[in-house]
Amino acid sequence: MVKRTRDLVAEPLTISDYLRRPLIHRGRWLIVGTDTATGQIRQFYLSTTREQYRPLPLRIGIYEAGAKRPTKILFRPFEPTVRDRILLSRLVGRLNEDGTDEASLRIFADDLKIAFSA
Image (cartoon, rainbow, N blue to C red; front, top):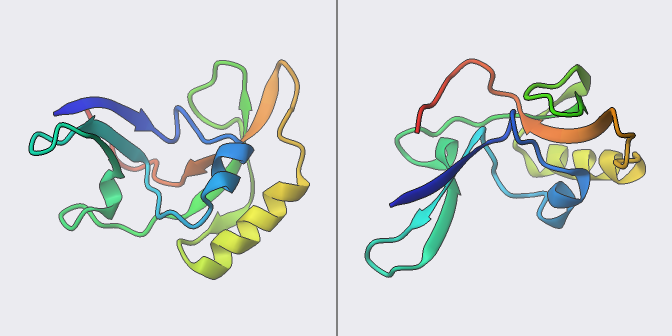
């Protein structure tokens, strides 16, 4: 049973969230729900399922306070390869994520083509 969805464009990852697990295959839509067989909470990215699989790059964006999309996209897309995800983690590890009250750096899945309704 689906409990929640997270749109990684509207609710992007903070730099510290990304750095905790940089090699996870991420997509735009994170699904959080209860496994009906075990009763345990599970989560997965929709684009990593067999039916919806699509390798999606991650991007660094500047998000204004309260914005649902990045105001500015920085650097090139980082593909879902170990090499690119390590490069991304090294890059963002050097950047200041604090930002200001008006804007901050965030990581989002570069999938602005599809919509999903829960």
